[in-house]
Length: 161
Image 1 (cartoon, rainbow, N blue to C red):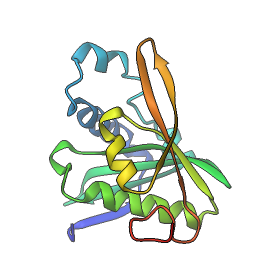
Image 2 (image 1 turned 180 degrees about the vertical axis):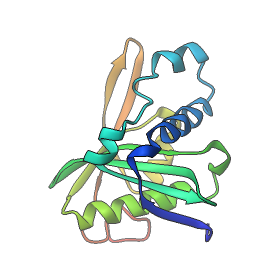
Image 3 (image 1 turned 135 degrees about the vertical axis):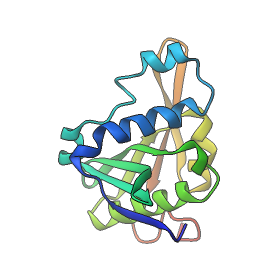
């Protein structure tokens, strides 16, 4: 992971980050018709990049993952955290999570809430998030709702509880 540069996203990267988002979601084997139905949800706009905290992990000048923090302190949302399928299991997700938690803490957030893909819930739980509920997002599709406290060492594996 030493060759990864973590930096603020640029508005002109919206199309590349949207494509990355869709590849990442497709990794979990969802049918193409379902992915097509989620096209708007699996998009990030230039306006969002300008308005919120969107951070890219870049390898060799190409985005390999990103996260998106939304909301205003003290309670925010980890709206997105996606990585390229070939980077799953390499530690990049952990690196982006830890960066997001530190960024949220530095911006004055006390908590972050997120709706997790069911396939990613175990990852977030390992990272220190707690399941606080679930939300029905479509008939028959419920997403785990998770929360992490980001104050003073919390939310980072090995940090204070």
